[in-house]
Each structure stands twice: as C-alpha cells, then as structure tokens.
Length: 135
Image (tube, rainbow, N blue to C red; front, side, top):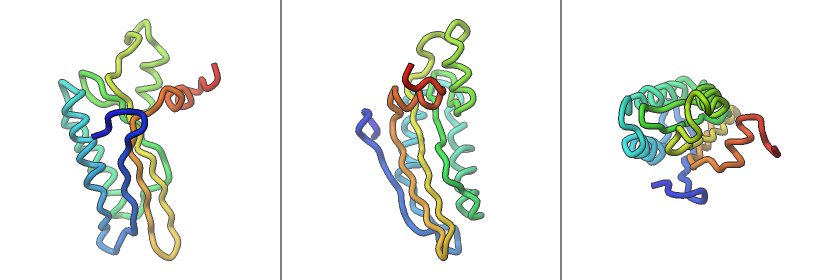
C-alpha cells in the first residue's frame, strides 16, 4: 500500500506479442486506493485501467505521467485536478484526499519495454504540475 511520500510500487518489463506486461500490483494499488478514498464513482478506476491496458496491447502507450486525484465523489485527472486546485473558492482548499501519479516510460526499439512507477505525489510535484513551482 502506498502510505507516504517515500513509498511507491513499480512495474517494468518487455511487452510481448500478446500484450503481456505484469503491472498487476500497480493495478491493485490503484483499486485499493480508490476504494479507500472515494465514497462514490469508485468504479471509474476500471475505465482508466482498461484504457492503459488497451494502449499496452496496441503498443500505443507513450511516455507520460497520469495523475489520479482521489476525492469523496470519485477520481479526477490532470486537467480537473489543476482546475480544482486553482479555484479554491469554488472547490474548497483541500478537495483531494490524496493525489497519486503514475509515471510511464515507454521505449519502442527492437523490443517494446515499459517502466511504470506509481507513487503519492509530493507537494512540490503538485505545484510543478500546476505550473507554480518556486512560488
């Protein structure tokens, strides 16, 4: 379980012809986190996981960071997290129970390799995502 700024879980490996990549522990952590932090719409995490798996299967996953903002009414992603945090008068000053990020590095060479790391976002990483680093 991801419990603090220092804990994370990773998946790394080659994607084979059938789209096989064992990232089940990352999937499990996201499902557990969603169940723990979201009172409603927790099933949205399955759409996210299926979308990522589809990209893996089709070899269309790219190097990117996927953000997960957990709040009582469900999961938000980068654009909504940014809008919510930049509008505290409308959404409150601490609408998120936690914010996690899934960093993905995909390499398409002779073999398709993927590295994934899921971690709780630090305050500095969130400020950087908001474009307010160093303020």
